[in-house]
Image (cartoon, rainbow, N blue to C red):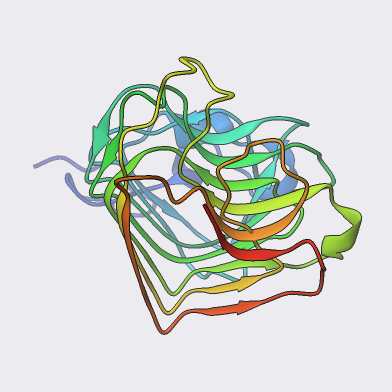
Length: 234
């Protein structure tokens, strides 16, 4: 059995601390490369600028605290994290996602909507209102637990905030979308939107519940400060 780094005494199979791989967490340095090279990741408190981190099956990224572990968008119209092929059993948990003054940002984007993300688990994640899309993709048996969407900033000043977009025909291929099955437990949506129309303005909680989709909601709350907001939009 080998050690990954003596400083943190990381044992094989344990999560790799991104600080050991060059991440600064100073809110200025682009830390994409440090996180992108790892499969099982631990992110201590700090502000990490990222854009284009590729995640796939069995990726496990966990932050120290979902208030003080921040992931910041690196540029306008960036996918902070993206899935390029079908993936399964990935886990993201315990951090906060912020727009960092950028526009058109997607936090988690499954690029090819004709494929799917199977059994993903998203836990204790806060997605600020400045993020245009929290999650985009076809999710099979996805779970969101104790997540909060649409907090931070002034939602009315942003063109759109969609917490979860299940169908997105604006993406390539246009004929995409695998039916989605998901569960949301103890999640809160503020001026959020779930919508089937990628170009809709306004704020939504969950968008695009589509024919054949099956979703369940347990102990979830929806609150709106905008007349154009919808809790669940199909």
